[in-house]
Length: 212
Image (cartoon, rainbow, N blue to C red; front, side):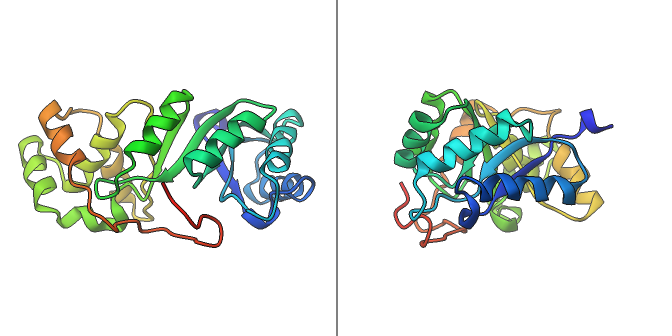
């Protein structure tokens, strides 16, 4: 049933001006075969398009009934602050790369200040966590894999949603099987201290030249 599926899609940075953004969403609706998007995101900010214009277009898409909620992806703290101040509609969520190896404490604090939902993409660091001995050892205590421990670490944090990607049914099932255990405060802190400098996996300097 459609009500059981939460559909999120993004608008490419080349199309986030007023007019092209709304047309892009219409095309997405047609391709997806749905009447409305649940969450519509700007994929990346575009320094050549005024952000206020992009937020007006995003708000227009919501008022037209094309999407139920709006949000942004890959925004720095400064860009998020600008988006919050210029958006005519409430921003519901922010999506950014987040896994145990990438320190996002500053961005997390900023997003929480605004009371927004946090969507962590690349939550298992493109599979790198699967072979991490620290995560493997924690998982043995609960009969869980390193991937499951990582996903649990993410969703056990306030307002964090994790979106691991897989095309294998058995992996999809494993990724969902993380609600029957809880990590201790010590384990949460241990994983939170696994950050490694230079561990960003997704980088598009033409859209975001300077990360927080």
